[in-house]
Image 1 (tube, rainbow, N blue to C red):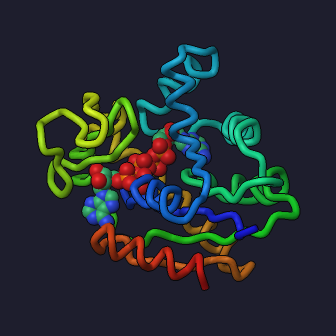
Image 2: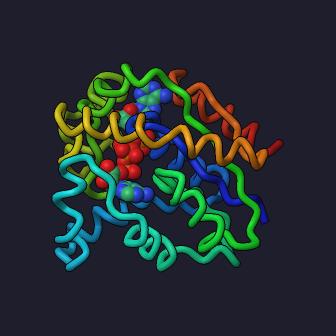
Length: 212
Ligand code: AP5
């Protein structure tokens, strides 16, 4: 089996966009802790009610809650996954190895980009409420305003993609990422890609890395 692939990067650096292509073109399974948490909120579960305020404020949900959700939704014995949104801090990086990966091989890719570019990407993001396709009003607008090109469902803006919450999310990222990068670098599992390039170019770099 291919090694498990961990995507590390700031909010808006393009992890979700690239994960969708890695799934459709390279047969990975995608696990996004943000998506799992948002579906808990949508279903109005107890967990959803607990995390809603934290996510709308742009802060991190506690490590054990996210770890439990992650473990309940992946089976590494049979599948190669893309981990999108986990780990976010040094503790989660450790937990991912000891509680989830165990004996599975894994490698990490850091989506390197100047953080000043990301607020515009995030506030202009729209996501299809039907199939999840990701759009951007500046760089990838739908043919018909507010409607998904692929499935015809309506497009929505994420609650945490407003200017104020984006500022907090980027600050949280700045405060937590360095030890995570050091953790993977020290174990020889870190690659970096230039995430400021066009999506097709970023995808080609990722494909090269996964096939190397
Ligand atoms: P999560 O859902 O993980 O969000 P995030 O990490 O903030 O990342 P995003 O989904 O915003 O960005 P992305 O990198 O996927 O970018 P995308 O491809 O969409 O987390 C949300 C919240 O959940 C957290 O704040 C926290 O509260 C909680 N949470 C989640 N995981 C957690 C954890 N492990 N621990 C604790 N709490 C957790 O692209 C963005 C936009 O840019 C799109 O419009 C896209 O079209 C455009 N774009 C993409 N690539 C390019 C490109 N190359 N050029 C130009 N535009 C591009």
